[in-house]
Image 1: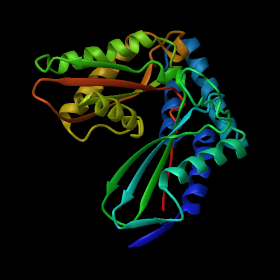
Image 2: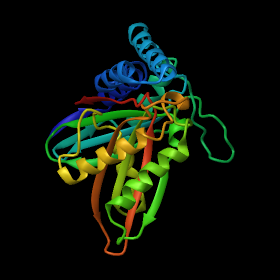
Image 3: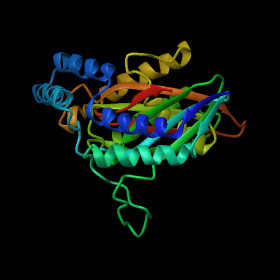
Length: 280
């Protein structure tokens, strides 16, 4: 049984919070840069150029890419041969988030109660998703989620008889309804199947897939490409000011479901779809 110290988790989460907020993943940097050279709209092309300049400046100076440094969503994959010493995993994650946001001078955006709305002043509690896996390692992924995009989340309990075209229709409708609100170009995460909460979790997890990858199942890869073409034909464009680059990627994660249902959730990531990962 391998031991992982509480303090190591705290320090790792702290660093991941700062890294994720200041350094955009390489696949997204490349996709936005490529779109800047291909966008036919002059306004859209100029905006994409500004986005490139913005993430390069943030990377060089160690500053947040966006003023909304998000609510910390943490995915933890814990090997069953691991034992955490010195405290609870959840406490270590929250302490790491608090230190990362306060010491990293990141905006503190979390309120402790949804109606009383009093700021917790350290961006905790985090949203923690824990999965037990094989092995003796702990993989931590911090994915700060801004709420311009999070507020555009859509969930629909489709009839199981509708077929794949209806799924694509719903994905496109969700992006169309969101318009400029999620700060396009967006990354489109789709959870399909399971139950309502599983579909929503899958949609959020889908945002972690590199935008230059496709679903390994050709059936779903084709649906992703079809949805992406239709979304970019909407004309919403960068920051909603028109153009052919509304989305950079569509990622569909399917799951087994009940014979009587077909849950479908769409979660949008803005052009700053941030995440950073470490393995302990």
